[in-house]
Length: 185
Image 1 (cartoon, rainbow, N blue to C red):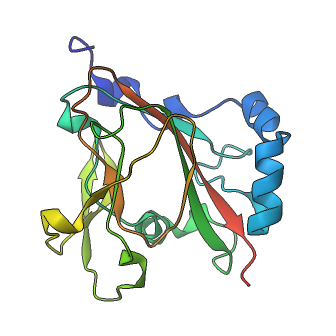
Image 2: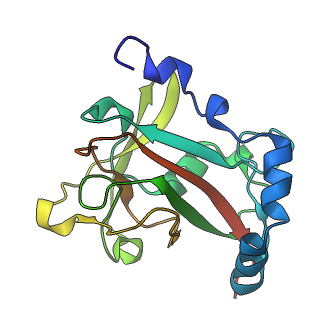
């Protein structure tokens, strides 16, 4: 994997599930339970593919370039408001680790950061794409590496500050994720 450009080969569009895979997922018992419990309207189509956007990530061992900076998913929507049909929906992120080594890789969160209105961010370009970057300094002890197991599910508010952890494990970390558009209570 060191001989290829991870960023050029595994662009977000190249990591998208096919329309057929998304249809199969939408017909699953898991999605049905999410839909009922969270009042799901649909899975977002921010890439405008004409079907739900479900994608995977791969984070190689000791490759910091495979992870992005801490961020709120909300910022991506603000950078590209045409990605969403209706801003009145609640946006909820679903992250599912497929291959993970607990304590060595996974998802980092800043607990309760979705409630903090004093968070500042800026825009930068990475691989030709506009992305958000946190300006506020976060103390190391405020970061929490979630203790997740393979095929568990993490569901969080799109204002929660989070990011992928550097992979200190023996194997690549693989996860899948998508954004739910839900009715507001």
